[in-house]
Length: 137
Image 1 (tube, rainbow, N blue to C red):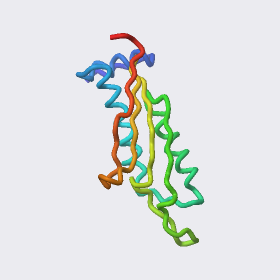
Image 2: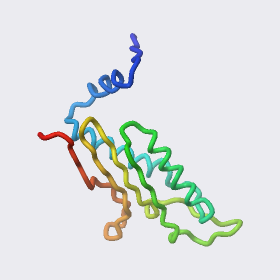
Image 3: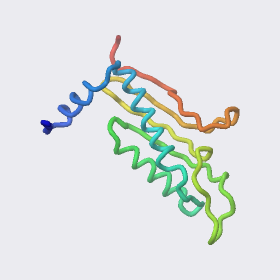
Image 4: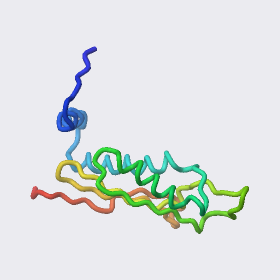
C-alpha cells in the first residue's frame, strides 16, 4: 500500500476535500457538527465543581480550537446545576450544563453551530445558527 506524504497544509486540504461528496456549504455544516459532538461526547461525565468550572470551560475551548477549520469557540458551563460542593462532593458534567458556540470556516463558508439545552425538548440540542458565504453565488 502506497502512502503519500503531503508537504503542505494546502496539499492535505486538497486530499481531504476529495473525500467529501458534497458542497463546501455542506462540508462546513458537517465540520461544525463534528466539533459540537466532540464537546458533548468527550467532556460529558467529567468531574466539575465551582472550583474548576472556569478551567473546564477553557480546556474545552482549547481542545476544540485546535481542530481543523475552527475560527472561534465559546463554552459556558451553567454552575447553577451543580449539587453541593465540599471536600467529598462534585458534579459530573452533563449536556444540560453546557452552552457552546463554535464557528468553522471551510474555504469561503463560515458556519456557526450551537449546543444549548432545550427545556421544551429536555435535550441538549445542537443546531446551525448561522451560515455565511464570502463570495456571491
